[in-house]
Length: 307
Image (cartoon, rainbow, N blue to C red):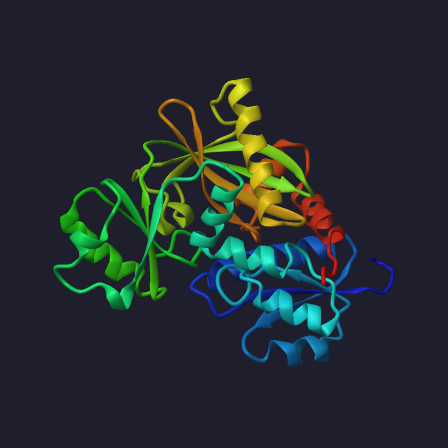
């Protein structure tokens, strides 16, 4: 790929995760240039097709997070343009971005995930929530298609549910409520079909929300996770099965919670994980002996067209 191929790093975008995408994209761009690749940045907005054509790129390295970037839309555009790209194909990207659809696929494949329910923001009238909620408290309330824990709340009692739904509804018209599993959060990165070391996530606030993810000192990351050998094998196996069930390609990250008995439950699948030097996927890769620059190069090698 170093022989004349031009790599465009797609970053920014239109989602609530734009700032994180810019951090990921610039870190990737630096790594590619350090490895000797002809790489340029492409800031993504509604004019992105024009910018891609103007830059004349041969391969797209997608560093977008959230809607209009991680959800299959940009991937479909690149398929039409005939430009190979990193990450998962259109369908897998769309499925993984939509949390209820992810869970339906996981349920079909008999992979463990917390019970859930979908609500329409417009259907929720004051006084009717109690009749609509089928799950028992405690509950997690989240938008159906945002990443980085944007708009996510834990609700212990019915009194806090309306406010949590209103907060999630700022992001999407549909809201997912999910059974809250008491236990420890873990994440498993997958690189080209191979699981990476498991990371245990310990947020000081008790909730791994946007603030805990991106505020220094708010979360402790334990690598390798404090699990037995049998548990490590089980969670990596479950993560890999989820990766294949959704149809992922290249790199992905599967977020899970282990209940108090050590049983894993899949929370979501990220098809374009954060790629700053302090992000979880690079941490796991480094523990496996892959430097950040090598990780970026391995992801690049997986770029392809899928349709």
